[in-house]
Image (tube, rainbow, N blue to C red; front, side):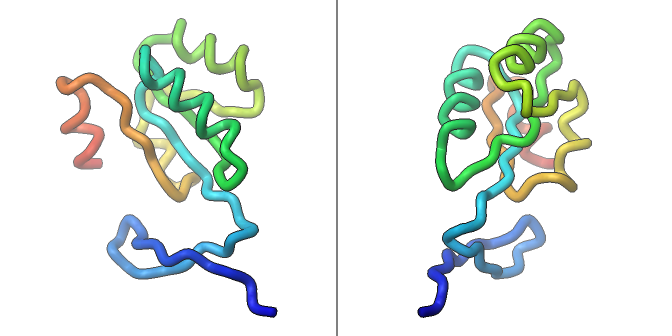
Length: 102
């Protein structure tokens, strides 16, 4: 029996598929009020693997490291792109546009 797959569009705009048994490696930009809640959801989601989070505030990154020791942290969100399949942007409006353009 063939494995089920889900069609996706990659960052480059090319069509691809993800096997139903594979986990999507997720990165997150911004772990403030809503970001912490989203990080929890992605960490617990069976089809996702929260790999790295980025925030400008070290205290937020420390909190994530304590909650999820297996998740990497960085203050430079650009560094996560080569290691993840999807990025969640959970920042305020002032930072959202620059993160989205990357």
